[in-house]
Length: 51
Image (cartoon, one colour):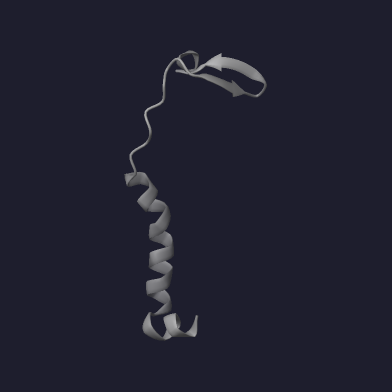
């Protein structure tokens, strides 16, 4: 860890940690099958019923 802290400032490390959750916004979400069966709070429903 000392190796990284010498090369990068604390501010740079914090900016990188803050940017990680933002990267998940750019991922393509998988297409959900509208006829798929899902369980929510003990209820068995078709995904199309939820929309």
